[in-house]
Image (cartoon, rainbow, N blue to C red; front, side, top):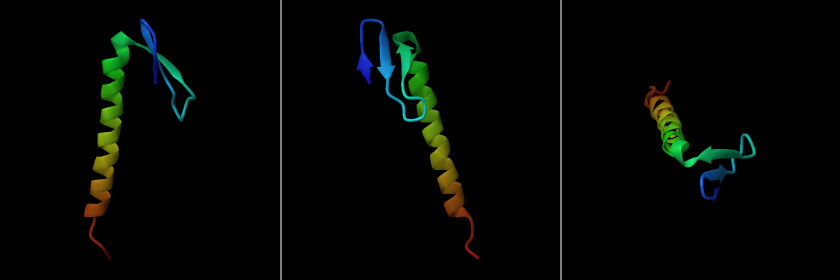
Length: 52
């Protein structure tokens, strides 16, 4: 991540990079947290499945 006066540049694996304004930064963090929680939930669900 790099930051300037009004924007942040985020280096991303899937898109290469993205400019985000400080206004949108909180929404961006929330979206990432939601995605990570979803992945964790799917992992927990798959682990809960009964073994054959």
